Image 1 (tube, rainbow, N blue to C red):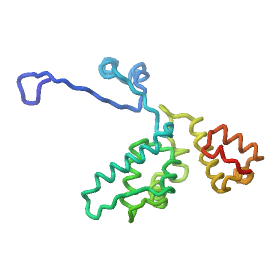
Image 2: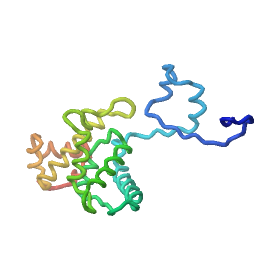
Image 3: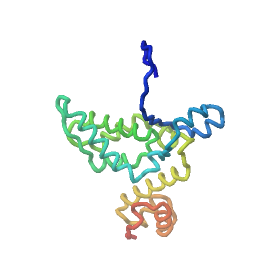
Length: 206
């Protein structure tokens, strides 16, 4: 390369790490991305599923991002080390996160700023999430479709969400939970719990 204003070229040893939300081989075939550029940068390819498909990662990401936010805020006047209440964490875990990790980070950052005390409460997270959840333009009906979108996965997320809520509200009583969800019987609810591998599937209360 030749630096701006220089007369001699120089060699450089670089590594390029690039990210995209497009399927580049399809873009190449459609003529929307240069094939020679693709072959130059696409040496090692890592396909990362959307956050809604990485349920096991969400808890770890929440902890890591909140720890990062706390570290970066230590020099701020009036800094308070923020923790998450159980209710606040559950709200975060139930969201589909169409904006993926960036959206999760921004939500945690806003909640940490708005929370008056050391603990981020359910109300703080609810207020933050309400900024981008209005009417039908929410994480369910407003989810971006295309690469990484899976209607079965989204429907399963919705089912698990309401199954867990019903089991919590009924305190593990499956007969009562079935009534709350408009399901015909205790057995029907059990089948739904097993089908969607709800975390409440093992509850034995009738």
